[in-house]
Length: 340
Ligand code: MRU
Image 1 (cartoon, rainbow, N blue to C red):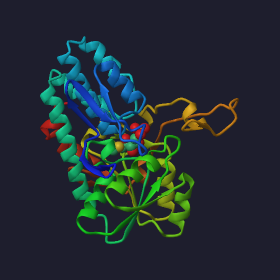
Image 2 (cartoon, rainbow, N blue to C red):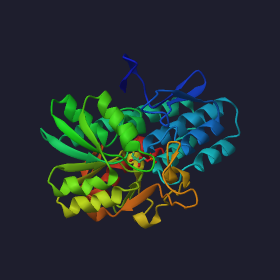
Image 3 (cartoon, helix red, strand yellow):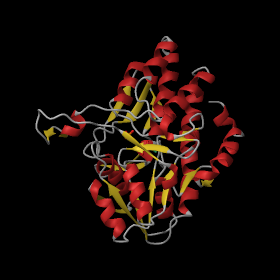
């Protein structure tokens, strides 16, 4: 991803391996500061995933893949390294997919690099397919951050928007702020600025207003885990956006690579939703926004039933929920997907 830091153009990925460290853009510090976090062992990787230095389903998978390869090169006990990394965040399927892939490939660094390169290439394809759904002057709503920061480059939900921009279309993006961690306001808006894509941050509870006023042509979001029937988990708040979209006849698309589809799950009822600490809700940055004595609840994701999804945009093409059987057949023939 090309970014400008202090007026200087730089080409960075969300996660990479260099000088015996897994390096990542510290997403806790954006948009104010572009800082690099260095993980030197599996404990650092587990911390980085749990504390959301790195976040977004595919990027978590890539961090885990490099982390396991680094642990192997450093002579760590691999069973311990795997367990540490596995027990960080339960919802995003990519984490478990990456661990399986690395275990099947004996934790080789070359496999971690291949995993990373594959994912970024696949997201570019998502961009190409998704661009076909975007018209000149489309107004698109997105939730959370499913951009290059959440993958390596391109992103999932943001890939079609980047491709649309590259192909000369003017578009406008409504960016849900995405409480409590503000991934929309802090990360998606920052990425769209870097890409010179016109956008506005909206409060999470404003999406219905714009949909009802016929100002949103389509919604595109990412996913953390997609079950066989098309129910999917994504950042908390996605479900209500999907219901609002159906109510207002706004097409609702989910962009995700094959690594996010968990065909072992029949439906979204089986998806484990991560519950995070109450401080994330009670504070914005260091500022408390409620009485210290009040408790808060903080589910990190929700599950949207398949009936609200117009289609899934993948690297294999675009599939309606009832067509996921054909997607599975294509994935079964794909060596990279079969390896994990
Ligand atoms: O808690 P996060 O920030 O890791 O949640 C991220 C999301 O919900 C994204 O939409 C999803 O991982 C898709 S990223 C391409």
